[in-house]
Length: 75
Ligand SMILES: [Zn+2]
Image 1: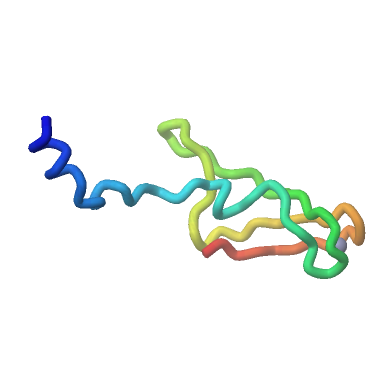
Image 2 (image 1 turned 60 degrees about the horizontal axis):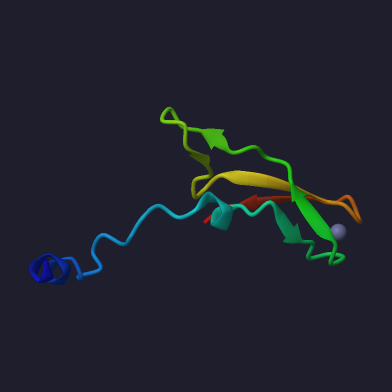
């Protein structure tokens, strides 16, 4: 058992796909008025059933206070 845990502790397998919520949270703070902006864009659905956003996607937010629309390119 100890051999397994030692060979497993390289941290090599800990890099996984980033959570979609990190790329595109449901709510952001409006940089204009400080209000709450709601995510308008729906995440795509992969063939395996998972869904989310990819870097480079453009997502749109709508501010509930000033009604401004924000298009944000995901990194
Ligand atoms: Zn606003």
